Each structure stands twice: as C-alpha cells, then as structure tokens.
Amino acid sequence: MDSRACRSCRSCRGRAGQVVLDLGQQPACDYFPRSDDPGPDPAYPLQMWLCSSCGLAQLLADPTVPEEPKGTEPAALVAQAADAVMRVSAAGWLPAGGAVAEYGSPHGGSWLGLLAARGLGPAGDGEQAHVVLDCFGLMHAADQQSALAERAARVMPGGVLLLQYHALPAIIRGRQWNALRHGHYAYYSTTALTAMLAVVGFSPRTAWAFDLYGGTVLLAASRDGDEAFGADGMDRPDGSDGVGGSDGIGGSDGVGGSVAALLADDARVGVRDPSAFAGLQRNVQAHARNLHDWLVAERSAGRKVLGYGAASRAVALLCQAQVDRLLLPAVVDASPAKQGLRMPGTDIPVAGTAQLASGRPDAVLLFVPDLLAEVRKAFPEVEAAGGSWVDAEKLGS
Ligand SMILES: [Zn+2]
Image 1 (cartoon, protein in one colour):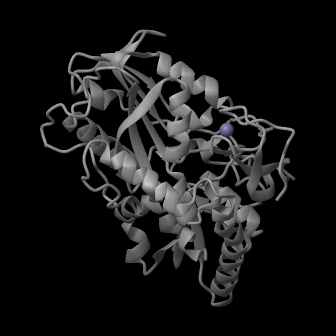
Image 2 (tube, helix red, strand yellow):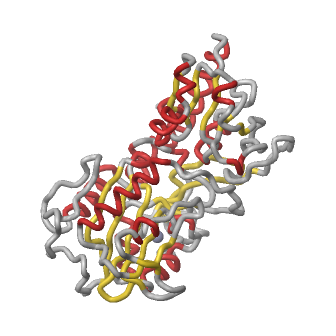
C-alpha cells in the first residue's frame, strides 16, 4: 500500500493518506453494454484512499462517467425512508409549514412526499430551507468540501442539515469490500463527517441508526451557536434524545448520546486506522474464490443457478470471481432499463423477472441482501418450485 503524495483529499485537501483497499482494474459498474456487445469493456483502477488528516475514506480517482440506468427503488429503501421520517419528526426536527431542500441520490428515491405529508414543502431553487436533506446524495460529489459547503449554506438560521449515509464501520465490520465503486466518492464515518461539518461551522446534534445496507446512519447537524428548533433539550414527544437504531447502536446516555455512541463505535472499529481495513482487502479474494467454487459445485451437481440484482456490488463480485454465463446464465433484475443489456466485464446477460418462473432455478443468488424479504414475497414461484434464495454476500469470509 503506497502513500500518494500526488493527490489531495476531496474534503480537507490534505495530501497525506494511504490506499486502504485496492480492487485493481474494474469496469465501470454503471455502464451496462448491450448483450450483443462482445467487449472487452474498458476497465479503470478502483481504489479506496484514507485521508490521514480528516479521516475521510474516499475514491482515489474516478475516470468513469456515470450513466447508470435508474433502477427500481427497493422496498427496503422505501420502508427505511418512512421509518426515518417518523423518527426525525418525533424528535422535533420537522417543523410543520417549514421548507425543505432535498439533495437526492442519482439512483432515485425522494423523501419529499413523506415530508409533504407532515406539512413541509419544497424550498425554491437555491433558497434557504428549514430542513436540508441529503439522502445518499453527498457521496456522489467528487469535490466533497464544496458539496458539503453548498448544503450547509442552504440551511436557514435555526434549521437542520440531515445527512444519511452507509456507515463506514458497517462496511469494515461486514467486510463489504464491494461497497467500493466508481461514482461513489466518499465512505463516511461519523468521525470524518463530524470533522467535515466543523469546517462549515456545523456540529452533529443527534443521529439514528438503521439496518439498511448492513448499517446506515442519519445524522442531524445544526449551525454552531444556533438555537435550533430541534435542539437537544427541547421537549420531544417520545421523551427520547433521538437515540435510535434497530441495530442497538445508541443507548440513552444523555444529550447527543447517539452521536457519542456512533463516535465510540467508530473508534472501536478503527475507522481512521489503515490497518482496520485489512479485512476488507483479504475478503476480496476469499469472497471471489468462495463464489466461484460454489457456482462450480452447483453446476457439477446439475443444479441451475440464476443471479438476482444487477447492482454495482454484483458487478464487482462477478468480475473478481471471473464468473461467466457458463456458471451463471443470467442475472435477473426488475428494472426495465436494464433489459437487453449484460453485466459489465462479463458475458452474463441481464434478464427480466419472468425468468424466475420459466427458468425454474434451483438457487437464486441474491446480490442485494436488503431485497430478500421483498423478492421472496414478489416471486413465490422460486420456493414453490423447490428453489432457494442464497445471499451472495454470505459467501464471503
Ligand atoms: Zn481529508
């Protein structure tokens, strides 16, 4: 792992840091070629770099151009949004009649409908808002410093900045090496985000943890010195301090307790320590080998396997494992935009959901574990025909 003196942090501009995860050359995970395009697809270096100064884990370089066909929004994501809005509202951070500015993810999903139901309307273009919401949007900004500054500037006096992110400790702990992808420039710990917020004069006030993606955090921050309407100390309908979390992170230890708990969890995992990322790197080979071996064994046993979920992590995993259509004849995906295309970096076609019935698979390899409950319900024919759903992430070490 080399230090790169030649680049600077996307947030603090510091130049000291280390590559902590190196996936070598990867095709752009959002470029799905037509199924009759023989390739080879262009590949680009894919590396995670950890800034020694502010601690932000980030994409080292990204020569790709985003062009992902929008996928369908997973039900798990929709349910989490409803849960999150309910909790934030209960904690007093959503003033009825207030204005909201939303910075969304290019992959889709908006909370505006949920917020409208609670009496919040959209702010005008570029206008300040009571609530500035960023749900998986910020990580898509190559320049993290200016993107966060822009969002902070939109917060009106007394307002709140809500940031939701896939938490770095969950990535490290779950060895989710294939969370790293082109187009996602930052992988936030609460520790790094707190440092980034300090630069724009904001502090985290409370946070909620969710199981989504193995660990997702929604952080509420406000301007230093502000009398925020949702400030800690105000009466909350549920008497809580905003400590949340279906995964048990938190614990009601007073004002801002949930933020303190997240920071403590960061420290336990070692989010600023390059050596804490070693398990991620080790799991790349182990996960790829286990997947390949499993697919070979299934084929030898005469069992038919299909994939489900043409997501970026599937692209990375199938490329690392060098899986082709002989081992995995198709990856089923619900998004009509991906029909007629193939997975980047391999000859495996993307198929429509009708394949789940007609193909009568013995096993369906699920690349997005958050979808499990949803797909079992939507496609009962798989299990009715004796097939089973297999979590591709669990084939890792
Ligand atoms: Zn930095």
